[in-house]
Length: 80
Image (cartoon, rainbow, N blue to C red; front, top):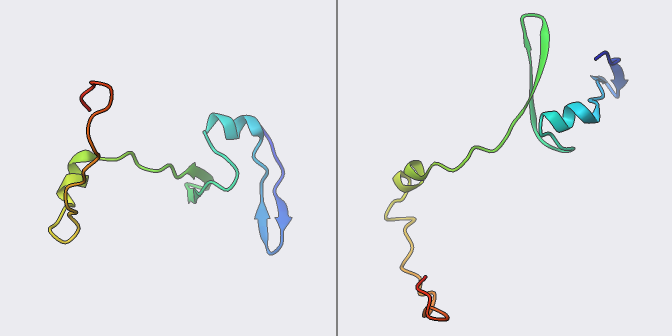
């Protein structure tokens, strides 16, 4: 797909068609990484990393460990 590079203030801009935005799971105001690779411009979405339970558990320290929380008693004979 061909698009035109336009002036935007002191910078250049390219409009990204809606179909490409959707295919890349990209929304307005989402952060992207932009770089040059072998003379090509690469725009890559920066998606949040999924949580890693092992890393989260490894990050627990005595300083950030909170006390046990009482969530009350089970409701409707169901054990939570």
